[in-house]
Image 1 (cartoon, rainbow, N blue to C red):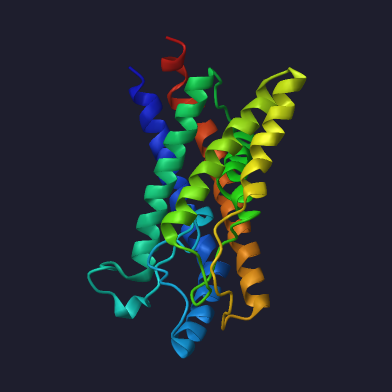
Image 2 (cartoon, rainbow, N blue to C red):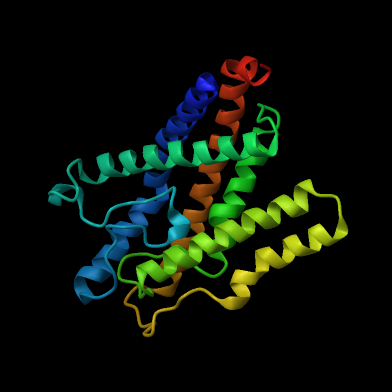
Length: 239
């Protein structure tokens, strides 16, 4: 049984989730707080209790201020952010570890960063081409439609990365490119009214900041996975 492999994977994910939280508070959270001022003034936009964009799955910050914590935010902004990041970190670590086992590839300290970069491209960078991270008070399409588009994009992008990176045939690489660009040709769901009180510069700054934070998260996660698996689970993989 791959018990040590499972535990090593979860521990690496929890570590990445912990490291992600202070990184978010350096830039992302101040931008969200700034945007909430426009939301309060305009009374518009969409709730930020859930991810503003599915491409922010590893960097979610609740909407209300910490001092307004209630049933939806029992631990305040910081506590809930940390909790969500821990869950996201463990979840993405398990997905990455399972993918490595399924493909018959081993994650090591030497190649862990490449697994992390692949995860960033699949889960964050590729979806953000058409569905950028959003701030409070920004217009957005129906959440279920955005999540469905994001999930389909992630699946197609993962298939595309596999074909491009791990298959040698020319047709496979060409098909991989098609899979990656297909959801963007189709287009992500858009809000009917794009009017927003949030300045465009603030929105673009947040999109860049969110992607940079997620890149940092995935690099940490990939490296931590490689170290944990190589040091604590390599013996089980050889059995």
